[in-house]
Each structure stands twice: as structure tokens, then as C-alpha cells.
Length: 295
Length: 134
Image (tube, rainbow over all chains, first blue to last red; front, side):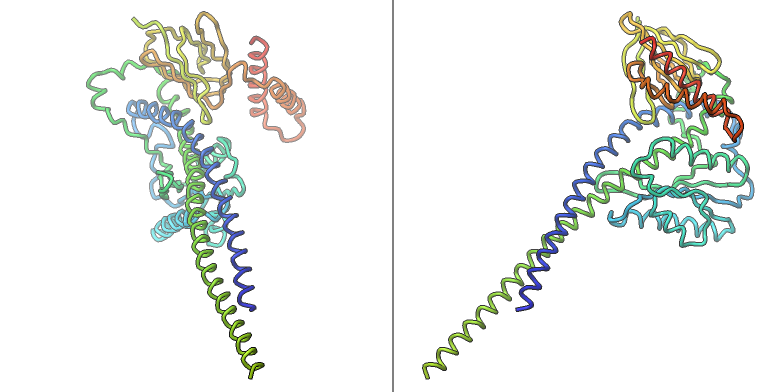
């Protein structure tokens, strides 16, 4: 009889878990909508920015700005790892961490010192367990961040790069492709690679772009634009990661809810079987008892 | 002959304005400049200040804190760190920010980032000015 009660308790338990996973799914989908709206708002800004910088970068020589200069004999590699703060979102954080780890090992092998800047608790907790140094770590920020966070991280790497205490900076974040697909992306942040101007030759041919007025002069303007571009990239990484996180959690929780359904089904089946068996054995007892009395 | 400008003001967090206007004046780092339709292509860095535009004969102000303006093909795109339409300015918050910055500037004994405090004061004063004339 104990088995019957156990099964019933287990069904109740699974049902409660299902309620939780279902609620988490709904919360994640609501948050995803918010995060997606933010990306939508940011995209025009980022796109415009890229256009502007692309136009301008074609005009000045490479090496016109310290952020564009490639350092000889790179020694220090900084990885900006953007992850989520919370778990329960499938393999999302694990994938990001794996990508970071791979890059770190690759760089260590060629004799570079690897340091980390972590936004998001999961990544930070991972790096803490390794031998790598953490320059900056943000936990509990990814839930509600704004441009200031990107600004802080950006200033750190820009200053580090200009003071030559950093030679290469990479950004690792989860790119939001679709709701069903998120991929970890490793983006070289510094030295800056200016976005390409797709129609450069075409524009040069028509001469349309050459009539631009720049205020202040190109070099000074570039000096204003480049640091901001770094921050824009970081901010984009953060927005994408937060979007991806919610999408990944939605998918994970959807799976969990479905698994709960399956479990409830098979447990109910087992429950019925055990119940029937116990009724049968009860009946046998009664019939047997009656037969014995008759005799 | 085009005689209207398309003005777009975007910040990292949202699109503040997108409308057809007749005239735009923006606070460039090397001084304020005005843009009328058929302006030559221009890319300029912006300072903290007021962006003005005329829409349907009425003039409106927008608070701008740093950024860039791009003028091309009768389209003015302003990428700002932050931007607020006059009616969206939180006067109480700006007032509080102003007082905070003033206090920090007055109190030079402890380690105060003077540049930052001055910038904060500057922003607060411009916000208040715009709010006063809305």
C-alpha cells in the first residue's frame, strides 16, 4: 500500500514542478518581449553609427588613432564575457563559457596572459574557479542594465588599451538569431576593426561622399567616435545576451513542462496499475476468506 | 524641390523623435549650427545643449547630451547619448541634480571629481532652461 501513496505524492510533486516551470516560461516570454523591444530601439542607433564610422574610416589612414593601432608582440589578452545572472536556461551559459574557455586556452598556449571582465554572475562564478584574473566583475546587473554599464566596461578596456596594459580585447556574448536559436559569438573588440563600407569603390567613383563637411576635423571626430563605437558594441552584446537568455530559458522551461506532462502520464499509468493490483489482491483475500468460512 | 527635412533623434535606449521639420539647429562642439533643406552633407560631434527644430511654424526644443549629427540628403540624424523632448524633462530631477552638483563643487575638501560635477551641473542647468521655456 505504501507504494500507492508514494506514487500519489510523486504525481503531486511533479504537478507542482510543472506549475513552476510553466510560470517561469511565461515570465521568460514576457521578459523576452521587453528585451526584444530594447534591441529594436537600439538597432537604428547601432546601424547609423556603423554607417557613420564606415564613411569616416575610409577617409583617414589606419593607425590614425590609438584604438586602431595593432600592438606589436601582444602580451595581455582581455576577454569581456557577457553571460546571464541566473541559470535554468539550458546550455546557454555553458556554451558561452565554453567559448570563453577555448579562447583563453588558445591565447595562453601562445604565451599571452589572459584576463577577464565579466558581466553576469554565471560567467564570473566560472572564471573565479579558474586561474585567470578578473579585472571587473558584475553580478546581479544583467537583469536591469543600461548604457552606463557598457560605458563602464568600455572605459576600462579603452583606458587599458591606450595605456598599453591590454593588447587584445575580445567580447563574447550570446547572439540572438531567432527565438529558437542563440549562438555564442566571439568578437574582436580591440584593436578596432572599422566596419567595412560595402559600396566604397562605388561611392568613390561617384564622388558623392567626398563632399562631406566634418566638424571638427576627421581625426578629432574619429577620436570622439571610436571610443563610443567600442561601447556601442559592448552594449549590443549585452542586449543580445539578455534577449538570448530569455529565449533560451523559454525553450528550456517549455521542454521541462513537456517532460512533466510525460512524467505525470507515466506515473498515473503506474498508479492505476498498482491500484488495480491492490484491488485484485484485496478481492482474492475476501473471496478466499469467504470460501474458508463456508468450508 | 524639397523643402522639408527629415529629423531623427535616436539614443541607445529609444527613438526620441522622427518627424518632418523645416529647420534644425544643433549644438556642435565648435559652436551652434543651423540646417535648412538642401544643406551640404555634414558630420559633426555635438556638445551638451539644446537642439531646436521648427515644425509647422512652431519651434520646439530637445535636450541633447553629447553625440553626433549626420546631415545628408535632407535627412538629419542625431545620435545622442541621451535626449529628451522639452515636455519629457523631469524638472524636479534636474533641480535635484543641479543642487547635488553645486554642493559637490562647493565642497572641495574631499576628493571630488570636479570635471564630472561640472558636467553634471551643465546638463542640469540646460535641462532646467529648456523646461522653463516649454
